[in-house]
Length: 257
Image (tube, rainbow, N blue to C red; front, side):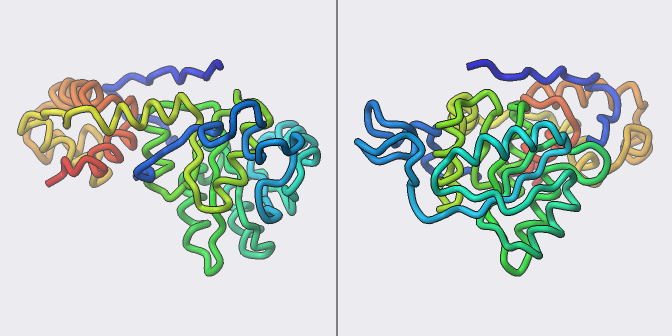
């Protein structure tokens, strides 16, 4: 299975605007041998794995939404009740339609991204589950989505049967992760906490307050060049490539004091 590799931005500049469950599983982890994901042993492909799932699609590409709608129409037990082309539209429609699950892309063009949309969806009076469906699988993207409350994280390279199974699992509140994502999560949990120097911690703390390089330099009485150097080291140690990713990992691992 192939995954899209995000190109790391220059760690020295401001990045553009832009805890999983204890037992994360891949989409096929619980399927009986030889049975399609999410289907009981001996059931035909596409057989419902539980109650009907009312689903809202959110992707900024109309062609992608049309393809997903057509694909999901072939899946038993899944009903597409609406579609949105932006994060704001997804929140508004979810409040009106009250779907069981929102299938959420991460990058949504102008406006809020999929992570912020997920936060707003989960703040609704009748919050739906959120299953991320994206091409991005960096540590930072996964961490931000999970911290925002996403129940699952699936890659667009997955087979249709795996998507159907993940939708049923996420709608029932069970964690659904693509195998490469599950591997990343487990590796991250098993890895020792990164050792940051006192100065790197100072810069990370300033970063968490939303300060840019110039303001961090002024606050710590150092040069911008020194800030950029330390930021590069922080990114490397935390395994991220964005400022938001660094802050997310730092909060997850309680590195901010």
